Length: 448
Image (cartoon, rainbow, N blue to C red; front, top):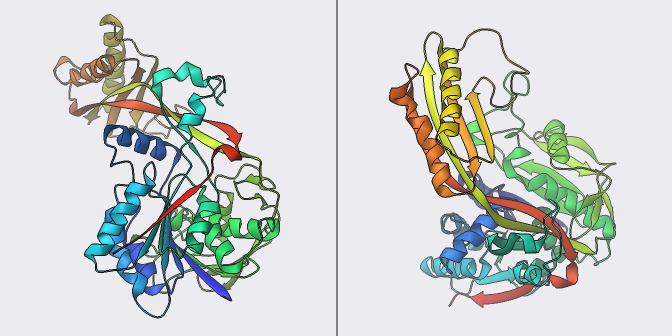
């Protein structure tokens, strides 16, 4: 294979469907990648699986697969799908894909599930291990919900070697989803750190989907992006040495140029000389972008060194409850009435003995993001009060929201649109473990 074409079908769990279908239909792809896991997403998925053993994978899995599976066998080019939509239950997700394939008449379709990232049992065997927040595993006790290691390319590469059409994983590092098909297609050696570094750069540019094609870039009047409502997701044309042209489907919305690629390169990168992944320590410090045509950019200059001996693990645990109440005030003196409402709510929490560990009282649109540091002159005509706090129990969290709602009739004047909610806090922390304690396992099934 001289050139590999990989498209980004999603940048997060709830991403749009239409751009992925556009890529599958018109992108002349070899691979379509759906990157759908974040740190809290995997913990929430583990929580869902505790309630229902058949749950725990991405809620949009069925919708996405019904939309794109028909394109796997259309035209003369073979399209394959890789995704971490398996979340906490890759085998359950793979079974659903097989069921959908059967409905669509895609007999003989091969679906692989990659497991091995769930290391909760390993953590429970090491209660003295310490998380990055200073707590020991033993301190979490029954509040511990999940522990998932960031796996690399190995399981996906094995699944592709088994000729899988669809590969469903759990927690795999985002760029690894894109690096794996490059390694499979071009036969890069396990210690080819240079090409792995280049392939990781491509993965990093694509992993957030519409961000690199203008979505997260857009700022009207400063950085204009055309036809944002029809934003096209990116694809990469990659040669055997790992050099990539980043582009998108012709006629799709958005923009893809040196500026958008530069912003995405910097996204979530702490040290550009030492970008740690399970597959390589990538070096982005010499990366450059060159426009080679409309919505077309050549990415070059990445390199890499030997991969780390440890894997990052995201640990999810229950950490109390959030109680929240909101209410709006409009018209003359709206800000003063909203501030008085906040003061009353805070006093009521103290009077009624609502125990709050962390408390915020803020005016949305006025001081909720930056405090009073960047206020604009002039009085807003409408404002919304938000009071939120973290409590040890659900009952206390409910009481907090109730106090805000009672401002309706207990003053100050003119409050409306009150809402309240309670939600459990699922916190995340991290630690590192030896990679030999998280070995990928591949399960392959064929649609009858």
